[in-house]
Image (tube, rainbow, N blue to C red):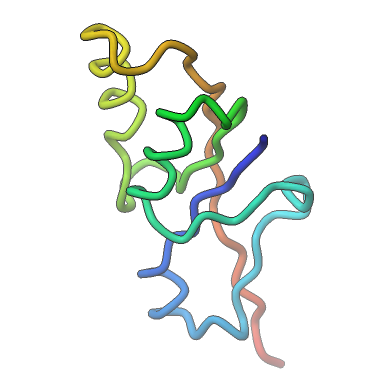
Length: 91
């Protein structure tokens, strides 16, 4: 499964009606928090994970996944990509 983690803080700050995910991730399942994403990774369901760009909540998530692999809690590491929300400007 391909999944994208929503940056709910940015949705809130930017007014979610004017915020959009990049079109290239249109087919990805939206996960609304890091905890749910971690549970899906433990189950082995996620092959590609798209997380908010560095500097936003979750910036250390890939490092955390690596530490779980090192201690044997996760067997398959998902491919990690980053995104930045686009905010539609009002005219």
